[in-house]
Structure formats: structure tokens, C-alpha cells
Length: 146
Image (cartoon, rainbow, N blue to C red):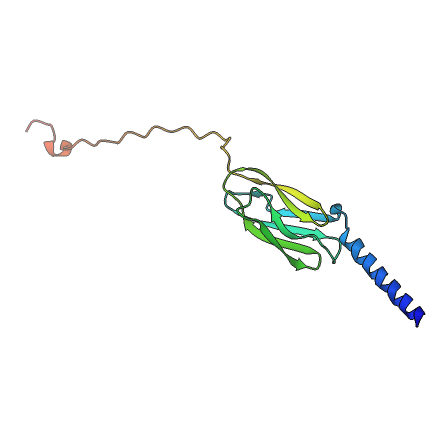
């Protein structure tokens, strides 16, 4: 009887150690991808966080000063959390952060386009003068002596 309790106890400790090892996965084991990486002001962006482990503790929310609101990441496949949100209208380069317990995080940058144009405007062309047709010229006669 005592031997059975020891075996059950050892199995329990082994399972706990396996769960804590999965929870302590290094942050480098995650890939944070943004689609597209260049977004128009006010456009939509998709955030995907891929893990190498099915028992992934990372996910939850993606935050960025470039988002209108934090993007909630939902499990979309056995190792991918994803979500879609709207970006702000101010052009610039912004950083996205996803926190991973216990205390790590994964980051990636994206760009909101729409800054001042660097291509010159084409030169303005002068409008063509309007063609004027004389009035009454054909009604004056042949011009000869009659």
C-alpha cells in the first residue's frame, strides 16, 4: 500500500514538473507576425502569435500605441493565437507587445503610412485659349462687284 502511494506521488510531481516546464517556455520560442506590416491610417491589422508548444501560456492581448484599442488574441489553431483590430490615423512606426507569463514579452513593429509625399506634383499646364469663330462672315456676300 505504501509503495502505491509513493508511485502515485512521484507521478504527480512528474506531471507538475512537465506543466511548469511548458509554462516557462522562453520568449524566443514565439513568433509575432503582423499582416500587413505597412497599414494605411485607420486601416485593419491582423496579429498572429505562433508558439512551438500546444500548452502555450502566451497570448491574451496585443497592445500598441498605434492601435485604436488592444487586440484580443484568440486560439485560431493548436499553436497560433490571432486577432484583428484597427490602427490609429497618425502615420509613424509603432511597436506591438504581447505579454507572456511569467514576465516576458514578444514585440514587433509596424508602420502606419500616409506621411508627407516625397514625390513632386506634376507642373500645372496653362489652359488652352478658347477658339473664337467670327460671326456674320459668310452672310456678307461674295465680296465682288455686282
